[in-house]
Image 1: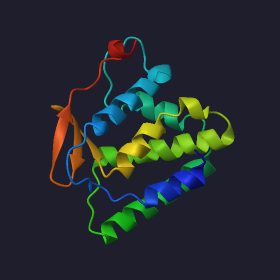
Image 2: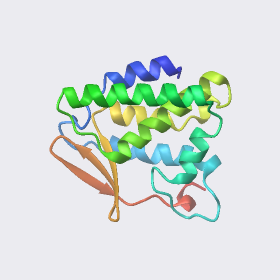
Image 3: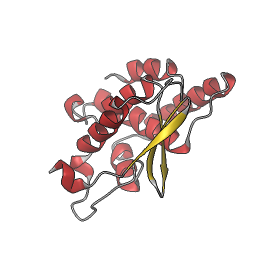
Image 4: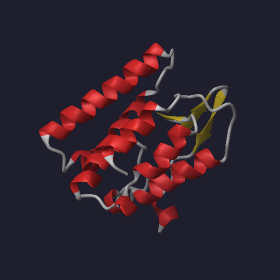
Length: 158
């Protein structure tokens, strides 16, 4: 998806607004992890959703100009969320940075759209869910609570 389209889609998100639990949220999380296979080191059985390995891969091909644009767009998202009274989890914020980075990479032709890990995250966020990472696992937040999913194992996607 083009960068501008991703930005537009993210501006439409109401963070944590899903009225109730939807099992599709877990499916989107697992789809995200499945798309991480190309950057997931074989010697790492599990990764947090915002692991440094993922961050390095997402940001690797970006220019300083790309990074500045991503930072500006992210700040605009968080300002709008604050103005609406929405609290955005730290892991969600970091994942949004990855989503924006992958969109820039797709625009530049360094990431095939079919391999873009952001598509399931965009669906998750658009449905009103957020991601938080704790020692208990990956929390999927919605308006009235959260469900905690275990951190997926690399072996489960082999």
